[in-house]
Length: 143
Image (cartoon, rainbow, N blue to C red; front, side, top):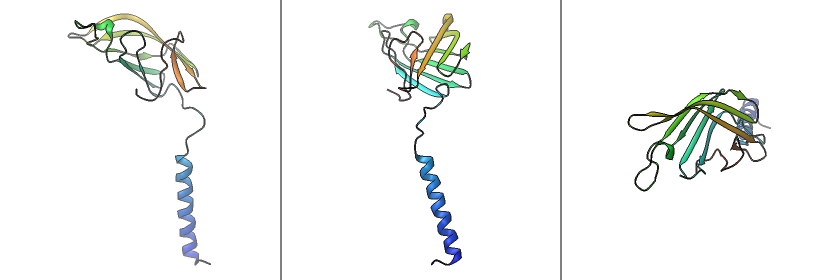
């Protein structure tokens, strides 16, 4: 038998190790879809990289190559589009917001005064889909 002092130390080390292992095991339930970062490749023609970050009922969106903001002589997008705002409606599986879309040209300009962003969350696949359900899903992994 270990001396009492060593037994307490051994118990402490085993407890800490167990807690670390428990914390390292991923949760079986999906994270809140309206917190954190989502990515996708724009499926609507220009195949640019898009990102949306959700936080507390707000979002920040960027499309790094928005063809609606301008294209070069090869018809490749040259400017990013940004949008940010708060949800008009939000629940566990849907998020809708209507905000302006700003093109980051020189100088920046407003492409749309009032654009509806809508996402639907699919908990079975842990993906987001545009409001209409089409296109390419949004994932938590940067493409």
